Length: 374
Length: 124
Image (cartoon, rainbow over all chains, first blue to last red):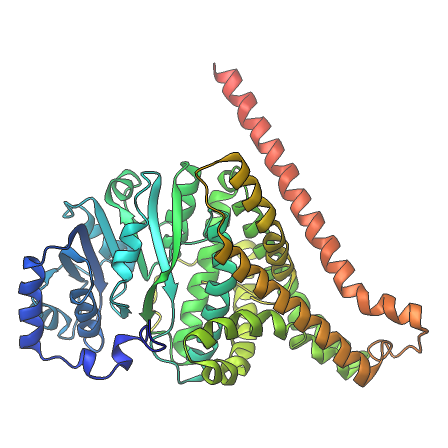
């Protein structure tokens, strides 16, 4: 495998600049190919005209061909539906906007006839063999979901760079260990393959929390099912490019995490390893965040400015896994130059989590409105 | 999806601990299940990353020590032993915290399981 083989299709240049007619041909050829798999792809979309073609084209180019690709046009006011139709995939439209990604996915669920369902975000492209890698992980009947490695499609703004480092670090180190202990924390919402029967058993993606992917994953564990993380199955979502959208996304994730812990805590305690990572995460996100945002500056002012080193003293923890992955992708400099952005993102992430914690637990103001992250 | 403070905190320490257990767990699986294949690559990669992290943290410690001295943060003039204590304090505190949290989780899990078992017994 060459050094640049797993670049996002949109960065490979000509790969995604195929004309619509070519895509139509591809789609008809797709159905004639022999390597079809019993998978229906569902793509919830709301005003995704800018990126939906890239997503659909990357699905059409998969080494394993899904039986059907369904785009759920959730009340878009742009030409998302027209673009998808021109690419030859099925488009369904709920009678009115469902209000969330989960709502749109559930709308499609009863139309799925295949054994497996691939859920992918409208802004997410896939490496050519990503579906095949996930599909191969479903051999064990106890496995109900599988997810892959996430790498931001665009890495230019401060927020995208911060997210890039965060993903390289987390998916190379944390998630690999979670997979080893057979408890990946979440089957990522942007790209996951599910056993359709399981989705139907749990009535699809729940609307009771803001992190439906976490809810679905933790429910699976409590039912004795397995979830897999396949690092070679790579997807490339578009991450929030500015503070406005990043804040929305982090807010949704923070509230979603708290809501899921409150909802599942009794069940979580029955699941070894998962209960430990969730508890450690709770500590780091709450108590450690308070220390990080208040104690360090106070100590820096009252005792010694050297306490500010506390913000960067754990750099090896971030640098090593990030650079291991970045080096294998030929992106060492990109990763190194993005480290400061991650440090900024981490502070913002902590502050937003504490705000969410205060709102959910003290003010009892649960977040219920789904806001798109870009 | 990461919440709060990825990298900092006791989370990192927890994952380092999990990595340290991996080769032993793998060995045990290989002995117990003849069909199990020792996952050398995975274990070696994660151990390598952990080793890199620990080495990196140690280098940071040496760098800070050579630049600032052990007592620099506290502003207290320290002897070598006292200085060593200050430098190891964050590790001792973090490790103790992690142990307390993990123990609390296990104790809670035990009581919840017991409660559920008792409730099931009553139901029958």
